[in-house]
Length: 65
Length: 134
Image 1 (tube, rainbow over the protein chains, first blue to last red):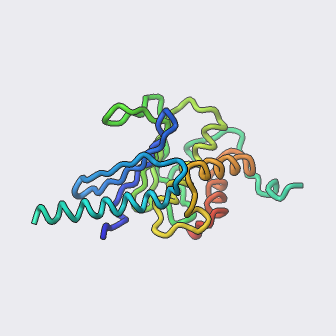
Image 2 (tube, each protein chain N blue to C red):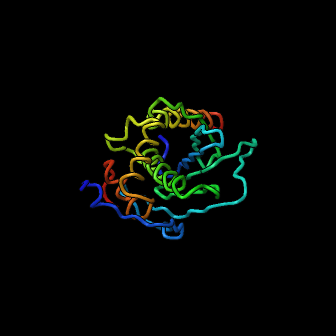
Image 3 (cartoon, rainbow over the protein chains, first blue to last red):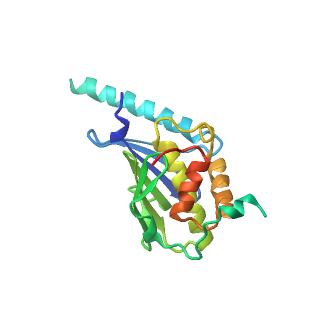
């Protein structure tokens, strides 16, 4: 489980109106980014990206072990 | 008289300095806010109008200068509501289904109801949408 307090959440509004959500885990430097779908709930998109980050971190830990 | 008029805590001009180290409902703190004349460009060359970072309840906002007073106000309402919704572990029920259009609508309604974004009005917005405690 990712320690949520250590995750950096970045919300970016691009010049073309699109919005990006970027999650960064500072210790590993791992970053995942998603263009937010305008019609989907932002919270659910965040949770999905957070689970993907957790899965990626778990893979990194297994590889490093 | 509209009830919302009772809550109008409007300022004519938005002073960015008043938002620094602002404690917000939901247990957040707006640590930094900056308007920049320089383009906000990421590593792959995408240009942005605004970027909000949240770590452990601390928000940092970078906004491209040159927005009108109304655009800046709506942007502030939007960025704070969206950052709070994303950064909190258990979002209030009222925002859990919000998509981008819903957040933009809430930001525009806040501007219409309460006027320019101010420290009090940003907290009013968060409180209105169910964020509790400072």
